Length: 416
Ligand code: IMP
Image (cartoon, rainbow, N blue to C red; front, top):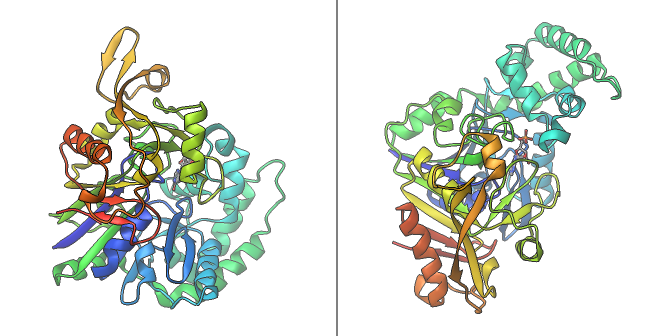
């Protein structure tokens, strides 16, 4: 079995898109199993720069099929735009398989997200994610396969739109929405299928399947910083939940972490740096949301949170991204524990109140002056950068096998 998982260890935006794109060179399938267009994965390649929201980055490669499994919520309007952008850039049309069981994000889900104050209070991405998953759990949602049933679509859309008119937002026309959904069914029909069976058969015949996680461990609905989380399962456990494929063994479970920490939206962030150094990380790292353009909150590596991510996912290796952004800092703070009241704490707390009140305990690691963007082997890195990597791998007890030093595929060090 060649099942490879790529999972974010922080609050998303770790650079999973680049890692997935690199690893899909030898893959047959690249599968998205959670979330929807709230994700923004950027790829830089010979065709230029593209930001994908639903489509797995690896499926930009010829011969690789992108799978949107049933754990996702999919906005057909956004998906159509992504396909149009791919074609505008002169890229070959990706091979896509969409789960018949995946739920559809309707325009009213986005209105509802704003109407009930989610966008404001939690800083969500306004893509309709929470309301679409809520309708799914309430058994009111529409799946892609349902779009073939005109009567069902009309009845459901009328019911949903009439029952949930959002004050202050223009009323949506159920007739128009239903009509557009019929049209989408015709557009996507050829690409719909049983993704569970497709992935299972691919694995059984020895094919390589990459599972591309969206968001990060700390945004997981159950294991993250609730309620400041997304509405899906973002950890390695989301793969079973979101694909229905029993995977007895992963050949690699890769935890992707940025060399510092960022967070978009509201919620606790113990190692946040609101001062000039945080602003420096934001400018140097281009830390603006790929989906919303919002400035990301920036801070230092949080080893308490990363140890927790390791415990939850059991990574076999790590991919460290954006190490180049730290160049030029004389000292790099890393958070090794929290102080709560007078007590030193090394476990990641579940209580939001505690998490909002913790004081980070920092160790200062020596920085390096050199520009490391052109380093192509571990030995090319200055001593202090190698020590920074070694410190992370020793603390987490997992080897750092991939180091990314820029958005381009060449700006990567692979270690044995
Ligand atoms: P939602 O997923 O739009 O409901 O947003 C919930 C929280 O997750 C907000 O804080 C978002 O900023 C955050 N979030 C959702 N998707 C991403 C992502 O792909 N990267 C980083 N943060 C995300």
